[in-house]
Image 1: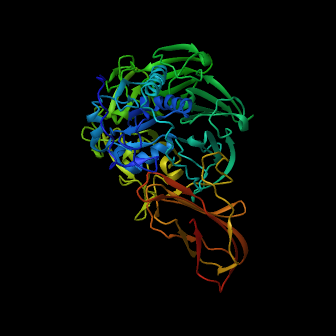
Image 2 (image 1 turned 135 degrees about the horizontal axis):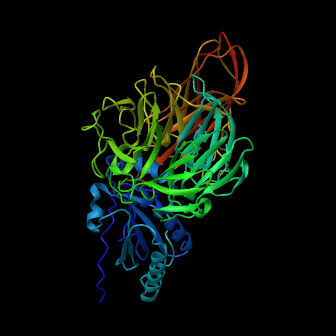
Image 3 (image 1 turned 180 degrees about the vertical axis):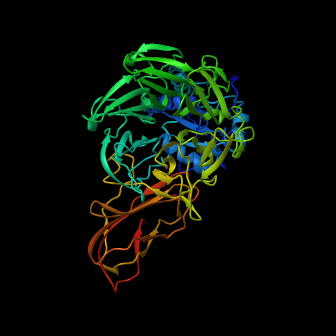
Length: 624
């Protein structure tokens, strides 16, 4: 008699992603060995489990074995299909994900913490449960045993189940989930961690309209960790940046390393980290002998590089001349406790900024902005109260609430915050003890009623009254003037997405007959697409438009939730002929399916601009 508990059924009526149909034990999953990963996308430990899951999926890809993510949200913002879909793309998750509405599956499986992994045998009986990270070998052995047991008792299916996987949209901006940004007015440069393209983008400092020109990309675009020339170097989802003279320091997050880029020779070297995740909460070793864990942001003062070490919930210091890397702030316990640096408790610090004698940090899992007094070596919390105390409230520090902030920046005597899960930028008056919203309205977007909207902004940097925002899920960087309150999307001429597998294929551009358009005034354009029967344009993923004439980008715009056909205005053009290239990127979904398909139609439009031309143009494409 089998006394193992029977696995509760998965709910077909819940929202499913990365699969073309809901999956239930009674039907599609009959005879499969299933590993359920209870996760929430804010959680660093859940992120650390993903490489283990990818390893197991690849090892057992020819077996009747399937990983299913059960997304049981911690934060309110994480409970939406739109934000979970973005996280699945950002983390490059290959397996199906079910959104656990009201944490029903969490309760039915008696889960108590993130991440928790539940292995279900081919007979639908629960084989075992394990919580936390670092369990690859345990899971590997259990999966192998469950497959052998199912084969022996005749319950194992004959073949694996292969649900369709969602693919990424190639954004017209040339970026993919940019994590952090750094402006260098003295050098006239802007640095961007193009995180999901595994590279750093270097452009000229944008002008008032957001125009920039590509100087160089650093990294070949694939996940890797090679040192050497910029074009041959590898990164793995880099995040934070710090600049000292002509050396750019990079938090190479998923390689668990700190990299240094010599901007004179354009060469990359590793200065800390072994390339494998470490569990050391003290440090003290030199350079590449010292293991790190998910370094997320950097700040530099003199010869000291400060590291927001999200993995062990600490801040570290790296002595650049000597190479010593040591824990500086935090015991390693995940919580919010002020006081002496060695006794303080932090919770996934993800953003750093230096101001005078203080090191400010965004402590994401406690939805807090905190600071370290570098002279007295004490931690003080400005805003934030606990792991499950969050919201969206401006006002005095005592009543203010944030939701999983990931970035901080210094402007004059103010601290600016990327209030990431509230899709806002906020301004802290430290002396006055208050906080207010500068941009964003609490909902994902790009622009709404003429005002800037954002979609989980992850990084900030202020320079000369201009704030540069890594608008992560919109695949763009925004230039926001802090005095005037105006904003523009940064356009980097010459920047293209790397040619990598898994991105949407643009195909060959359609060629239109020569158009005759009005010169000297803006012209109205519309883009319409005919989709396959039963399909609709996704309102949850950003769409983007780019119009170029040769290497000159005439217009670039990112749109989220806009009605179709898409409409835009092309700025006034002088009289004469031009050969325009129009590129549109978006996703469309089939009714009742959790998989959306990327589309990248493009057109070559030979145009004559003259004073008697038409005031509008329409582009159409059929994807059926």
